[in-house]
Length: 259
Image (cartoon, rainbow, N blue to C red):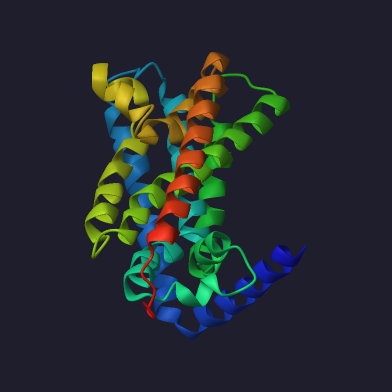
């Protein structure tokens, strides 16, 4: 309950600050709206040339697209602002202010800023997801849909963990921009069906760098491949454990402002 109350304070502060910068508030909405339209348009164009893509029909691919747009909207709303600033806080020694507080520093640094200006886009992404489901020709049950939503949330968590794995090296290097740029470049994999990759590359993108799991595997499970669940959960749990281990190692190596 203490952490819940603290997070409610984060929300109140974030909404107050967002309303002070209204140009940024509306620009974020416009920017993400264009991003959503472009992604939906790309797959629409692809299906003008083929009836099936990576084993999915157009209506199934639309659900997949809506899923990764929803994951992106969740990430932009809850984590993106915090992830952007974290390498700078580490390099400047400003993490000191969070280590001395009676709160888990990973919780504080990951969630202290809520992107209120992205919340409208989150509602838009939910709307696109509902629309994609309403157009889906493949039958599904309420229980199957509930499971799919949980898998999307799993993808959201995995996306956060992967970004943290690219940020934590900032404890050992002067700047983390290169690692963060690589993470942003790898995000394009999330927007592609995992079955378009082959051989060693596909193995890499579904295990060591599991960007291809974030949205593709939940969609494939939803469309009738439950055998992928074990792989999905093992990789997510493993990535989470590695992230926590590296975070603790990073804190021990951290050179504070008073060092």
